[in-house]
Length: 247
Image (cartoon, rainbow, N blue to C red; front, side, top):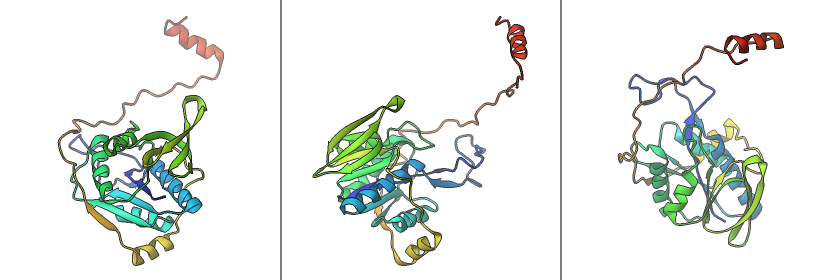
């Protein structure tokens, strides 16, 4: 089975995020980007499928600053090929990103496409189904387990409240991965450097992006309140409620 994994770099939420002077983007001067954690799980699931039944894994990402390191890391973890999509310009919103990925996949031989169920900077969870719609293939999201079959995959999908369902999907298709069967593996820095010296990244010219379908009008930090009032007794709670006219 040949599996493609769509990877995206997102702001590291451990860091403090600030809006730049334009009011429409994050301040990039000290902005640290990292691999979207759900995409990391998608990559791990792809590697597990390869180890269990053979095939190849191709990691795909849009060209951006330091994206090479992310793709070389994917190779160090066990991916067979890394594909960088170049020349797209600005790509805003899920629809544009899905269009770019779908166009790039025209040059890739794949049975299954995996991506993270969502990203920290775009939590609508619509990348997988939008890519699937543009490729005219089926899609299932919120996946927590994948088993390869003969021309199909059996997947476990999680619903609200922890309810699980099992589906069989005929290939080719797209899956939105919430969690791999095991935690994403770690690639030592020494191995990543070795891969950087010995491997190459494939490139494909991207289509779409910067097409005006979506633009950010304004971006603001979250509003902060006055803070919480810590109460140490039921009597204090009653007094507060009484002062506010609740009781």
